[in-house]
Image (cartoon, rainbow, N blue to C red):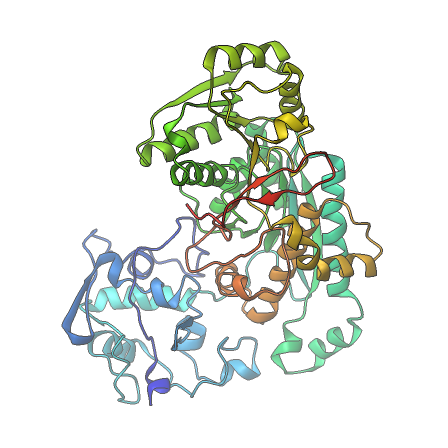
Length: 545
């Protein structure tokens, strides 16, 4: 009985996590959309409802999206199955979709009666389904007028009712985005992985094409040929939006898979959010952290997470009681980790942090380092600079006696050895967001075997592993959505599948939940053995700020 009662189960909402344009229904209704997504009436007054044991809900806590999700195609929460309420499944006979174009995504669930506007009103107000059965106690009872229920009905009718842009009867289009400044070898390493994955998806598919044309089973009707478009941007970041719009006009896509950015990613992020376009795990060190949005899924918070991990390490080791000096480029991306570290230390009551910004575009000289070490006399030196600039530090001779620790960024060093002398290496610690090198061979064994089988040379481990993960989880999500080609549902499936994916990435553990947009949340502090042949060794546990 619990299963058949889960019609419209659990429309309980906490505030919709992640802003961004929802995938628009065929018939957009502002009132219905506001009720569904935000728990607000057009007047701005909150929606009001009562749930089990008389608990009162209001506004965001009473909106539908929390359980039924933006797609309206349902899902699960613990042991509770959340049934789809998109109109084509709610307002038409249950089994019609199984022989037609659409099907209910959650199989194996007892048949539910078809809803009308009148029975929807009774379900919302009284918790009674069209067959006269009581709905689950988790289903709120709403205080909505006839006009408001009509608006919600209209919104549900159009919800996830059409294929998203980029999907035709025969093809599904994707892109990957590369911003200026990415090294050609890195770009090539990602593209080789994506192209091979797409070839695999489309290889040996004659039978699937034939079955789609003549068959009735959903798994065959959902088959599409995968098409990859490479959007390479050029010029200044303020020109990227126009370039992205031009690419999209030429060929709409269903989602962005992977992507590479050397620095600023904000214009790409903003475009994807405003277009309602999923951007699945771009390999970037500067993701948008504040107001992360809904459609962009990232591996981690990148350089900002490094700053937070370092602050936690300094607080826990009480190193923050000593004088800390940080060096960074005085530009938009250079200031970002410096500001994040200062804020993270201040949250922990540590204020003794001195900034030494590097201005101009020239290389950092030995004279700069000598003056800094002499005048600032740091006990802790944090350097947010690239490999060449870090190496110039070693030209000052042996480290001063008062310098206890030199902290470097693994992301900014591209996970490479800094090239310093043994005397410096004894004091170097690196903030390391990635899997421990000692585990990497085993962790990436599956991906490496896949590359060898396709005669793709092993190149940059981070780039190849992350591209492989992004492509694989996108492929798994498309398989699970069947013919429900909704971008929102695609995102929802990835949220649910990230933690259980068998595909490796360069990160030790990845997981997402509803509204979460950063799959890896911690990092290590590692030391570097003497010489250039040794691999980093963790000196901390996995630190989650």
